[in-house]
Amino acid sequence: MNILVLNPPFVSRFSRTSRSPGVSLGGTLYYPFWLAYAVGVLEKSGFDVRFIDACADDYSLSQVTDLVSDFNPGLIVIDTSTPSIYNDVRVAEHLKQIFPSSFIVFVGTHPSAIPEETLQLSDKIDAVAVGEYDYTVRDLANCLAKGQDLAGVDGLVHRKNGEILRNKNRELIQNIDELPFVTQVYKKHLNIKNYFFGASDYPMAMIITGRGCPHKCFFCVYPQTFHSRKYRPRSASSIVDEFEYVTENLPQVKEIGIEDDTFTANQNRTIEFCRMIIERGIKIKWYCNVRVNLKLETMQWMKKAGCHLITVGFESADQDCLNQMRKGITVEQIRAFVKNTKKARLLVHGCFIVGNPGETKETLEKSLKVAKELNCDTMQFFPLIPYPGTEAYKWAKENGYLISEDYNNWANEDGMYCSVLNLPGLSPTEISVFCKRAVREYHLRPRYIIMKLKQIVFHPKEIARTIKGTMFFFKNFFSMSGK
Image 1: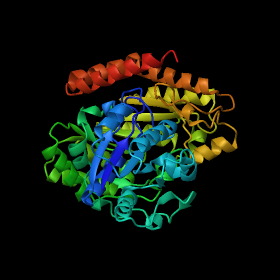
Image 2 (image 1 turned 30 degrees about the vertical axis):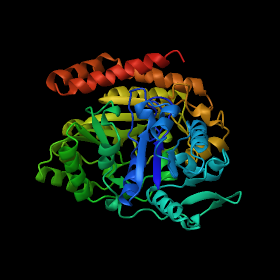
Image 3 (image 1 turned 90 degrees about the vertical axis):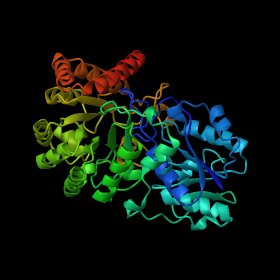
């Protein structure tokens, strides 16, 4: 049986895999790594798979149809997200019309959170794979190929005789090492030069080295709707093997991004990984996501092993806001963390969320002031987006803060995420205006500009990264400045 795995057409450079799906101000385009892992599992099981990332290749729906016209897929796997859900339903309906005998399954955080509601959007969607779907789509494909009843496919919500049935929940994958290298799938199916992260060297590749996150931030969508708060890391040796695979088989890749929610959740494993990278003489830059509890010793090991940048969620400089979102950190930790990164000579991409519980105009200005004091390599400010299935969504809905339950409003016409919260004393417009002003004020300060100029002078390898990121920033910032 032929299988089409599709990141469907929507807005050019729309990242469904981002924790806040949308078109990024800085031009970042995420790899569709969850789909890619599923592709690897399907191919390992012997299926013929055609994998298309329409947003990265800027394909229209008609172009996608032309690409698979001779393929006749029996199973179509479609990734979706909250802002793109209605568009993606239309894509499914079109493909069902072209391939009426195909079975269409939706995957991703949005349908995982509300599978029955998703299926009710159109009878052309046959099923939803809830949560981690690598083995769900494999088992579904096997059942369809053999003509077996779908009741035995754990993790599937599907239609049968006009009813929507929910199968047994699928157990989490415990041995993450058994999954194929996602970079092997990239090499076979994707154009690596399509993808970009403004803080890293270009081109780069994104991998996952562990699933789940043990922390309890109330806004984070993946742990709450997709892979749980149970942390399941790959072994250090497995990660090093994939790094080695990239250096030997993808020579154009200049940096590897570790896109775990928190790569350093187990700092002993992080140090073990770094030691192995050094011992095996693997030379490639990398970045990862961390928390502010990262120890200086761990940072120093990371630097020795080729890490040059870490991405961290500060979220707010107001302790009450941090407590209410259950971030589990303090403002003092934030300051100490940044001091240690400077000692370890690691760059920092910092993130602030705007519109937190307890947020006021005063707390916003406090966060911007502290952000400027921290003076990290790059800083982003984006609105709190309450996605279905998260505690943030429940909080917003119960308090009457959601301005709309029409998912079209989760992004604007350019595909950029926008605020859907009307908080006491903070309107959606005020939240959006602050985000744009904060980004502008942060990156156009004399102190920041001088820092970047010194970086270019003393580290010439940073020139290309800085120029490319700056071009994306100004292009996207001024294209949306009037909206």
